[in-house]
Amino acid sequence: MSTFVLLTLTGLALAAMYFLLAAGLSLIFGLMDVLNFAHGAFFTWGAYSAWWTIDQVSPAGTGSTPAFFLAIVVATVVGAALATIVEVGLLRPLYARPIFQVLVTLGAGLTLSQLTSVIWRPDARVFAQPNWLSDTSTILGARVPNNRFLLIAAALLVLAGMLLFLKKTRYGLIVRAGAENREMVRALGIDVDRAFTLVFALGGALAGLGGAFGAAYFGSIDPSFGSVNLIFAFIVVVIGGLGSVTGSALAAVVIGLAQQFGNYYTSWAGDFVIVLLLAAVLLLRPGGLMGSTR
Amino acid sequence: MRFGGATIVDDVSFTVPAGLFVSIIGPNGAGKTSLFNLLSGLYSPSAGSVWLRGDDITGMPPFARVRHGLGRSFQLTTVFTGLSTLENTRLAAQASHPGNYAFWRGAGHNRAARERAAWALETVGLAGKERVVAGSLSHGDKRKLDLAILLCSEPEVLLLDEPTAGVSAEEVPVMLEVIRRIRQVEGKTVLMVEHKMDVVHDLSDRVAVLANGALVAYDTPAAVMADPFVRSAYLGVT
Image 1 (cartoon, helix red, strand yellow):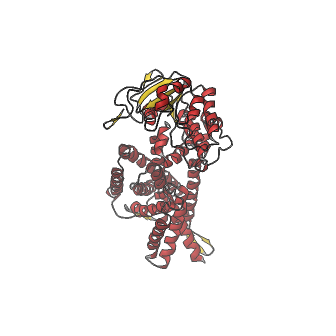
Image 2 (image 1 turned 30 degrees about the vertical axis):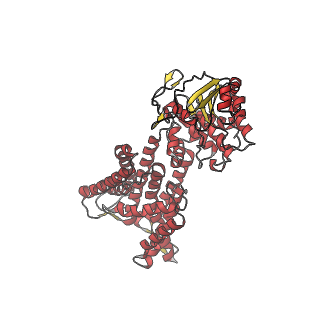
Image 3 (image 1 turned 90 degrees about the horizontal axis):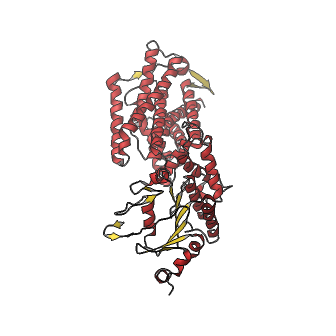
C-alpha cells in the first residue's frame, strides 16, 4: 500500500512538472502552429536561474525558504523574458516559413542550453532547497518528499489560472478563436501578433517555473535538463491534443503515473510504456484525447 | 481585373450613393463574386480603382478596409465553431472597441464591446442563443451569426455575398427580414450578390446586372426587369 501511495504521489508530481512544460507548448502550437523546440531551453534556464538565485542569496550548500521563493519568481521571469526575445527577435520574421521556424527554434534551444554549460560548466549541480521541502511527510505509511506536494499544488493553480484566462479574458478569447482560424481573427481587424507574443511569453514563464520545480523534484540539474524532459512534454502534448490545456493536464497525469509505475517494476518499462501509449493514441485517436479532428 | 490571359471583370464602373441598397445579379461566371473580391481587397485590380467614402482604397489590404468601414460576409459562413455565439460577436466587437484594459481583465469589462455584441445578436434574431456553441447552430442561424459578426465591426458599407444561399426555404424570409432591418434601422449602404429575383426586387433600390464580366445594366429594379436586353440575356424571357 505504501509503495502504491508513494508511486502515485511521485507520479502526480512528475505529471505536474510535465504539465508546466507541456501547457505552453500546446498553446503555442494551437495558436501559432509553431513546434517550439526552444521550450526545453526555457525550462533549463528556469532551473539554472533558480539554482543561481539560491546560490547567491543563501550560504553555500543550503537553501533558505525566502531564497527558494525568490528563485521561483526569478525562474518564471527569466523563462518569460527568453521566450519573448525568441518570439519577437527570431520567430516573427518567419511566420510564413514553417520549416525555418522549426530550424530556428531548434537552433535557439541548442544555443541557449549550451550557454548554460559555458557559463556554469557542464557538470551537474546540486539544487539546494529548504529542509522542509526535501523532508518527507508520511501518508498511509508512505514517506513522500514535501516538494512533490508543492509541485502538484502549483500545477493545479496554473491549470485553474490558464482555464480562467482562456475562458474569461479578451486575450483568452482571441487565443481560442485564433487556434481555430487565425486568418479569420486577423480579418476581423484584430492584432493577432500581440496575442502570439503574449502566448509565447506565458508559455516561457510556465516552462521557467517548471524548471525551478523540476530542479527541486530531481535535486540536481545539468545542461541537458530541459531537452530530456522536452521529449516527454511533446508526448504529453500529442496525447492530450494539440492546443488543449485540459488535454495536456490529463495526458500529463497518464504519462507521469505510467512512467513512475513502469520504472518501479523494471528499469526500462517506464519509457517503453509511454511510447506504446503514444502509438495507441495516434492509431485510435489521432487528434489526441481532447484535440479537435482538424 | 485579369486572371492569366482572361479578363474576368472588365470595365465595370458604377457608383453607389450612401444609404442605398444595390443588388448585383448575373448568371454564374458573370464575375459577381470576383467583383466583391475586388471591392473587399482580396484581389487587386490590374487596372482601375476602388473608392470608399471619398478615399481611394485600391491599395488597402482587406483588414484596413474593414477599419475604413467596409464589412463583408462570405458565401461560406465564417464563424468560430468552437466558441459560443456571444463569444463570436464579442470577439468582433472587441476589434472595433479595443478598450484600454490590460490583457488579464475580463472580456466582460469592455462595456462598449459587450453591448455591441449583445445588440448584434438581437438584431439578427439570435437573442436567447448567446451561450450556444456556434458549431451546433443550424445553417440558417450560422448565416445570421455571420451577419451579426459583420455588424459588430460597425461597417458603413456592407457587402453581402448571397446571404440566403444554403438557407432552408422557411428561413429565407427571416433572413430577408434581418437584412431589411439592418438596412432600414441602421441606414447602412448595402451591396448584395443574389440569385433569387424576388429577393432582389423587394429589397433593392438599384440593381446592377453583370454578364461576362461586363456591367450591362444599372437601374431601379423595375427598369432593369423591363430592359429587353436583360430579359433576354439573363432572365431568359423573350
